Length: 352
Ligand SMILES: [Zn+2]
Image (tube, rainbow, N blue to C red; front, top):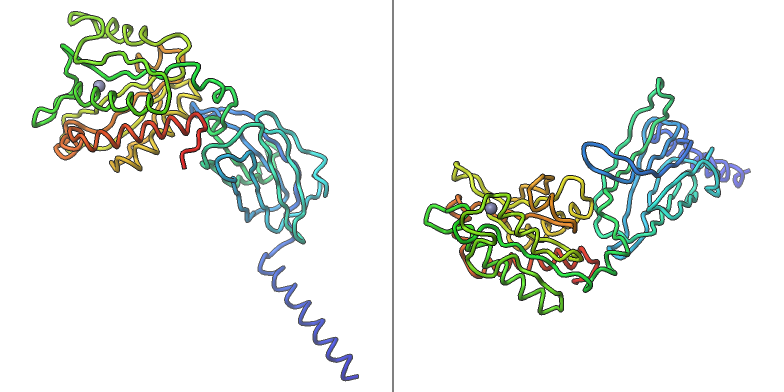
């Protein structure tokens, strides 16, 4: 009898602890309805959306992108059962490139693990995830949405491009056009050329062919040229099979307190965006200026080049502190190293 009481007590305790877990979670488990991965477009960006529809209201989830050479994303869905998707993850799963396959496992009682394999490697861990409420009029259940920009995926053909095409470096302005001029007279055309020459040196050191739009203080077309003529002359310097086009500039504004660095890509170019993003991250790391972001633009040299391109605004030459930094040789050197690192990451070369 004593024995039975003990067992009974134990059972009660076990049951109580189960109940407390259940009540902490406060409901039946979520039930998966479908999983989809598809290409979509929103606000000018193209991305892969992974959409996980489920019956339930709240979802605790955990997303892991494995390291930069991986092709795998793991998504843990707590307090969720496979339901309509099936324990073996066989039904109601649809996907398209760059997803290669999606598997689902109930990895512990009442929790699901989704493994998403891509046919490209992931070079960047940025993604956006959110839970959207059910929408009855559109017959949509509650959904977990995971959005990954396309530039995050490295296309194998990019790697094959290494060495076959030159990297074009375009030091902004030059000759009759000084570009922006700082309060103590530092000229944009000199900063852009100094950084460009160092960049050429480091790229050539590692064996990359480089083409410069200018190597001295000159107009590329002519001192009397129109803006379009001058910029087209720079575009024309790029061989047709060039791998990348990198235009180097400094920013300027009437208010001397404006400061920071930013990088640009041509609005429609996924690869350009990726290049601009990766160089931006390195400029922030090496240069330490305020990061104004990665931005789309229709700048002439971005629009009229056929290879992935980016335009870098290294800092504000009109800001007294940044003017001094931009004129400093050691600082120019770290900016050049930042750009090389960004380019290497773009090509999927490991740098660490
Ligand atoms: Zn400029």
